[in-house]
Image 1 (tube, rainbow, N blue to C red):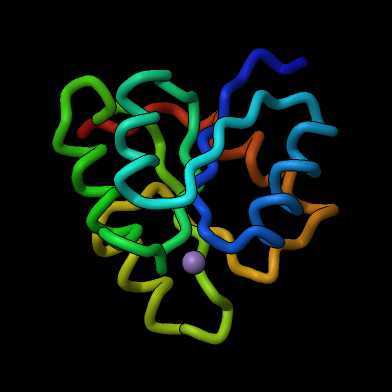
Image 2: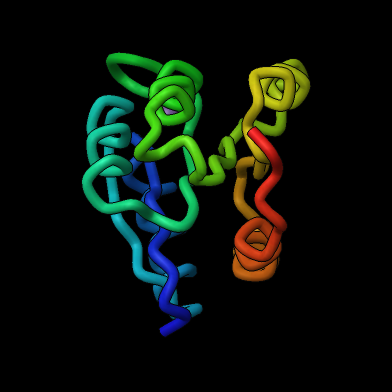
Amino acid sequence: MTGHRILLVEDNERNLKLVRDVLQYAGYDILEARTGEQGVELAQRSSPHLVLMDLQLPGIDGEQAFRLIRDDSRTSGIPVVALTASAMKDDRARVLQAGFDGYLEKPINVRALPAQVLAFLSREEPNR
Ligand code: MN
């Protein structure tokens, strides 16, 4: 147990399971959402310490869900990290421009993931 809750918003079952299993094994509490709408609602309800947000989702996409999280005072301080497809080079610049706190490229490097997540959790909260 690290005592940290991480909200994972991902519609691809294999990716969801992979990331969830790795992070649970590392001691994190994982909350799951499969759509952007669910992710926003769960972020409001359960105040996770970090959100990992897939970009391509059914319904509203990851960027729209991110904006809703940022624009709500209940969730505006939660760091949100995008899950981007490594082939989509434009995605990286776009998510940083949009204000995401960072990105992780898919396919996820399972060995590196726990330390990457810890690094995002350990950052000083920037002024927003
Ligand atoms: Mn997706």
